[in-house]
Amino acid sequence: MSTGAIIMFLFGAIVLWGGSAYFLHKTLKNNKE
Image (tube, rainbow, N blue to C red; front, side):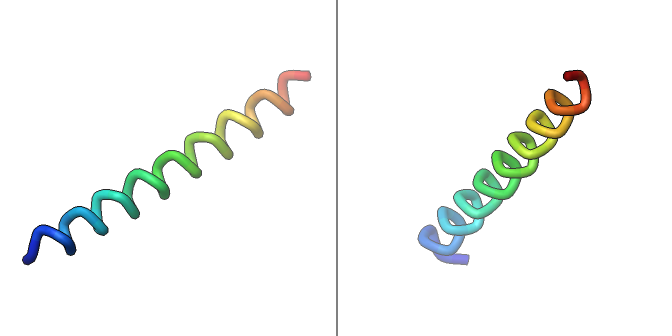
């Protein structure tokens, strides 16, 4: 794999994990209130 492909893969994984973590935090916060 080329460096560009690895960077794109890592960037995509970070975006997915960040989005899911943000969504999970948001739902947990809404359920507590």
